[in-house]
Image (cartoon, rainbow, N blue to C red):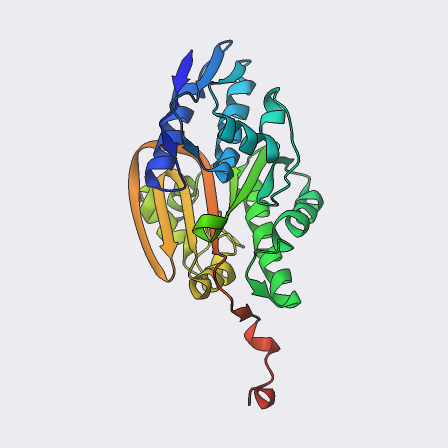
Length: 290
């Protein structure tokens, strides 16, 4: 079966909707040749290979053969630099531009490897906003909490990650994906309600809300990251089931897709034009401010 991808796939509602449609058209297939046709695709945001990798991994579980065709030279080189294509029979080339955060899939027992990956690929990136060592540690811990909540509450087998620095747009995107129990399922089971996907995510991201004795998937320990991204004037996006939620700077909005994604996507977008230096409030000695 051939699936022709759209001309532009970005980290926005329409881009996620395209990938959710691909997920719904492929996840039940068995023993098929699945051909992804990129011949019309002029722009594909590389961080979204975390989502695409999760979708294709699910398809491979159905003993389907995956082929990628029609990639432009630019997209082929991009997805070779971030090591995505090497997972599907393609080549890998060096990232001389230092703009990629490698595509990776982690087993649920690989928390230590995930931490090392964050340290190497994201936190130490030169274009990341300036942070104190303690704040870097706390941001790292928050991302590890996303990983752990995917394991504990999502009942998933793997976590998929990738990122990309877009110099012309002054942004660095980092995407974490799992295929498992959705935020909507967890929240509605806990509240005994029938919230829509976006309503469930809005509940989940509020500090203090929890579906059990600990953070829920979607709450994800996002309190610190939400505050940091608000000050950095960046963006957070969460996709789960039919829900879409995003925070741009300090303003949140949500809506619903016509189809559901059987898992959770978290995308963090950092504003790399921000020249401020950040630290935790607890690090500041008031006597030294003046």
